[in-house]
Image (cartoon, rainbow, N blue to C red; front, side, top):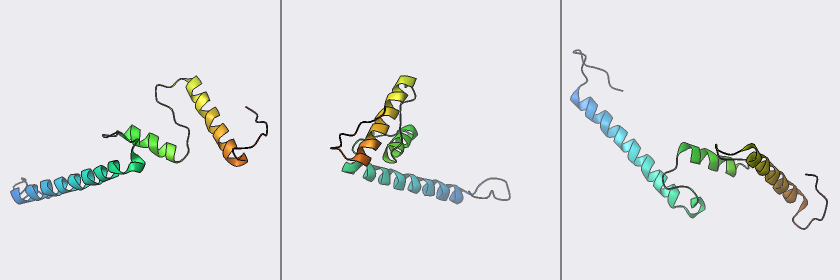
Length: 102
């Protein structure tokens, strides 16, 4: 941030420079975001993602159990059960006929 002049008011050139710097940062961020959203790997990301959308996708990528904020306890239980089954399947292999405790 720029320092005020001796009169306590910012210099016009300083304000313009700060404004241009912020615009450049926003343009770079938007450009990077657009490039990421065009990547086919990220096709399931909304065009204008919210912070919540990004958090959910990061959690999914890390293999965490995620549910919507409006989910019920039953929804959460089903999501946990599904995740446990997936983890067991990956450890045993897909063709295993071993019994599973649920």
